[in-house]
Length: 203
Image 1 (cartoon, rainbow, N blue to C red):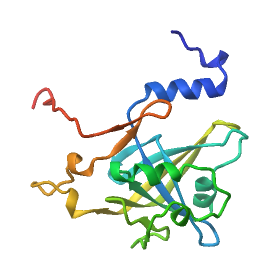
Image 2: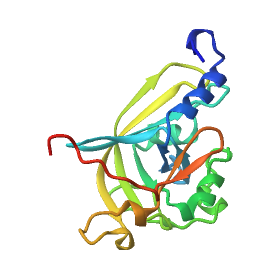
Image 3: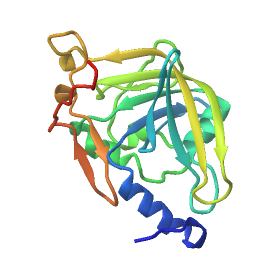
């Protein structure tokens, strides 16, 4: 198979990319509208960027009609957000949050989730999640224009919450206990419960 992006429809290129860039961690992002209404949506183009300062990035692609999603609209007006880490037991509610609800619909209420006040930012956390990253916007980078173009949201972590139940004996978050899920291609997901270790060369 040889893939030339210049000759491929956008939707086909997107499907191929999400099938080979795997597994992808999920950022379950909560934001606030200018009127103070919470929004909650999952994004699987997500990762850490740096520890100094502690920074994360997620990509929110435009809708098929080229319009921006609610998460981007909210962060442009209220430059704060929370990344909630999705464990296996939140897979169902997270998936329901991916539905395209009208703007300023409260997904916490629609999807049966509990909003929990953050400490340093305005958007609420997902109480049911075991890890929350309270973030302020560092920079938003627009990549391309129109349908499926990207809005890279780079956020600086100002406070992190980790539930005691996912801590290991060393006091650090234990991936087995966190049981985070990731996206594969199509409608596929994976669990991070089968792990192996490889010592780094040179100690």
